Length: 266
Image (cartoon, rainbow, N blue to C red; front, top):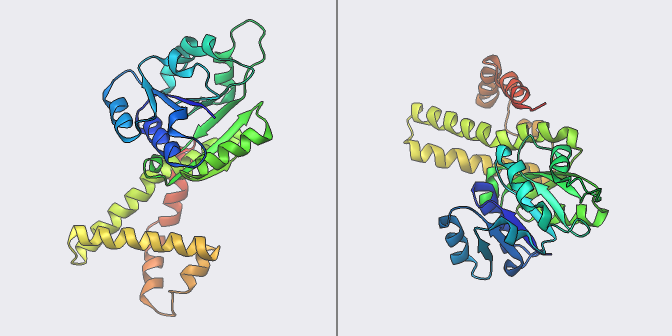
């Protein structure tokens, strides 16, 4: 599988690094294109076999999968530039631009010559892809079952990946892409609470982050409902239930739900 990634920014560069460290793609089968040289040089230093270039058209020639890791407002310009280099009979195209689904990208790929359009994927990771811990959502059109499975397996090596109906992409972005910020805000709030309780900030943050890791590990290992794990640490008249009830009185659950609903794209 030969992969071309257009854009070496936060998402494109992290995707290139993650795929190069996985089992599905050899670094020598990855080409990354970017207008500025610095990010390409950093990739090349870490993965000497990886191809890097400033020429988008050169990068996509012969690619089996083209990943477009560019801003939404740059997408049409980039697709117009590269589409004549793509073999629509063999290539698949994936967009990482939030809000630009398969229909919009397919329309941009239409060369007006009656050619059957290639498979198009809508691919939304979150920023934890940089440490291979992303929650990535994938949907697509015109793709074979084998290609769908390959995408889920390849991006599953960069954390976890889930095939979803495209109508659920907005919900996925609210939960996972925006959700990174919401989790960080909890860490910040809990750290500030720890300082008020007498901890140094660095110690409080260390405690909070390890506690979150432990909570996630319990849910994953036990495949349990969160309330089951909560019940294990709430005793009648105890301090945990008092804390939980105080948070709920302040609107904890409702705030989270309202935040998710507010950040869901249409």
